[in-house]
Length: 322
Ligand SMILES: [Zn+2]
Image (cartoon, rainbow, N blue to C red):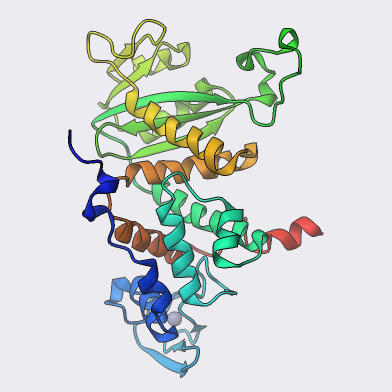
């Protein structure tokens, strides 16, 4: 049997020790190289794109655009806009976050980095937002795509007595949510949506999956309508996991497995309004599961530095306290 990827040396190219040994200039250099990678690591104006810029101040370095006169720093207009931590600490946080293959709890990060749990919660959600944007921007899914849905009960607490408990699938519409995934088979990409019922995801699937793509799905009636748009193969899970014609949704199930374990083992309870953020994080992790941790770390950092200031998470606790 081949070795599990995470046990191989190729999976480990990132060193938290090396990050923590970086001085301020080295950490700054990493951010600068990643943020301005399109210009060989040399700063350019984030507003107008001009490459002629003046250095205004050295510590911390700030620049001024020669064309539009905008002043900017290495984090201006990114997820790290008006940052509170040293760059080295962000790099270390992202390294720890990268290493948790099912995610990392905010409280865990708060302890490891000795930062306020609220700050850790917001910072990790900002990273999830950037990862989700990368997942969503990847273009149409092609090849063979598996689709499936996983119902979640959200905050529903079952009554004490077994006789009083309900089948979660029969909960009122506003109580339940379903995570739907469309996943390219093999080392492909996946996209997820959180909706009230599986059939609500059909328009998104139509938009996300290229025409002509073979779609595999289970027996759920929600997917019948897709036969009009795609070549389909169906598997009846009450009978078998793989049908005689090769229909199978095991890779979609692998995604749900990661999401379920992430909720049960790491976060313990995921609020319904945040479910999509965690689903997209798991989607990113699933898609990049064979990529070395050093590359993952760089990609997450790049996603955050390419992502605009977060509308949802900037000032989150200030707003929620108001
Ligand atoms: Zn400019």
